Image (cartoon, rainbow, N blue to C red; front, side, top):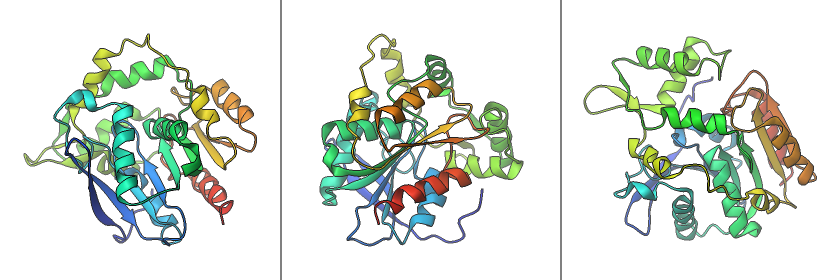
Length: 290
């Protein structure tokens, strides 16, 4: 993973209907182009996209959002608002505030689900989309793995301890990583707290809605994927993903003529947009909009 050498973004905020102050990074770009909205995964934040956003800016205006309860966004007073439909309402509040009528969506995992939900509500506003290791079907075993770690308030004494813990927990997801890569990843997903300990950068209460979801109420999400028809779409999948089944990924691109599937080798859930294959694929997608 290459270090971002200089800060080229501005920290910005917007307010939700229930009064939360949410954070996003804005990378400069031309106002005449639709902006790129980067939507992170369940426990992740704006730092996930720092290298990709820096690469796209200043050719594109890039907004890297942090959902409620993540990063520098306020934590919710009601933990049951940590749900996809609330996140959509929050995103639409930002779009209204910024007068964003049309945009490119890049979504990892939960962010890809939000992309599909946005398309289902109003497909015309999405000019192109990238879904990173997520789709209308998910592997239940992968969901159970996520249930097993979300909301676990572990902390660490040093960044090296944090990196080693990540390596132990996710070594099979990124088998090619060296210790420098694990250090970089730890600084994306964790933060130095006021008590001097390093912990994951999200509200542990985001796990609570899982306690009210027994997995029996499963909606048909295929119509949301089909709502992206007619625009450039890129689907990324980790070769070893335990979230997006290979068969589902194949069906997704078969259902959307022109959609591109790129498999990131020797990677699980989810690719990080640091991979050369992922970067090249995003740039191919955006080139279609020139």
